[in-house]
Length: 408
Image 1 (tube, helix red, strand yellow):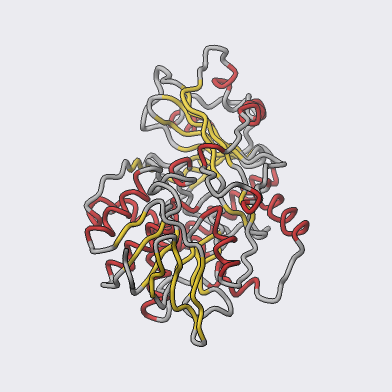
Image 2 (cartoon, helix red, strand yellow):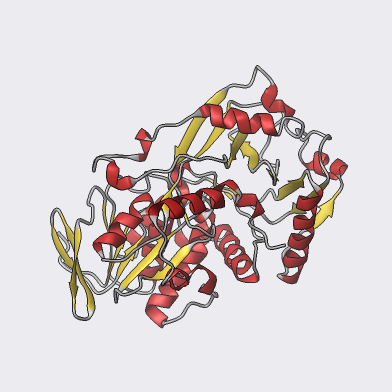
């Protein structure tokens, strides 16, 4: 059993694995704890999409840095990552959403990101399965990409291990030693690891871990689902990501078929404390009818999903953590010196994890990150206590309006 470490990271999903790798890269002795198998919970069940133009310049800078690091992942880490830069289409079916697209084009161009309006004909040339009806406006972002979700956290874990990190799967953090100057150790079933730095990146369990550190974490684990069809003739890797704003639906290629996922208006929210300690994400109850309703809502744009010959090859789902403002929750845990958190992935955490892991480690080691993390810092919730019902309702609304999280 490891007796001490410079830093202990809890969780081996995309956030935790990225943090562990970037800490090890800076020369710290790192131990990563995972209650289950490495990279086995929500991250490999993600969609693996990127979207670089976000609601603010700071969030856009994070997303842009993440794409740069995703493109260079194999070169940087020596680990495989299926990376496809096929671009993305974003579809407005209302004048309101066309206005949102206009603001996104302005923000993207200001940030130096390629993005432009294209005609419906041009959009259909890039994505032949796209229907013609019901579309008001479309944007094209050629540098957006998608990755194989399972390879990213596992790649970071293996790269961290090669840099000297110790990986301990099936080893939960059961408690903490906290002294006058903050964190002093992490308790596990096999003993206590002395450390001055803890990163809570426990995904759906991050709120429970924070509670053991006497800190409140305003996040709600929320089910997100997607399906992947069996191969469809004519569907290829060159097909871009497509998003329909008001329907909150996304579509992309995957394994010769199509992936469809989206944000339902009343998602299942889970109280992790009520689940048995042995719970794993593979046991999460799923509901494919949710996805068929979402498919029906975009029937004019994607009539292919109404074809009775369509067959599902995979239906999967996980529990990303939601915040009330639909933004990440990254930074020092208030009131606990030496404790840090990476949570609030808000469904888009996997694709942002390379940039966020790099930035939080700069914050830990250097005292400040190169990227502006003020909009996603834990400090924004200090003194803003919500009761459980209000927290859940605001997180539900944030999830249900995910594609409309754009300031007018």
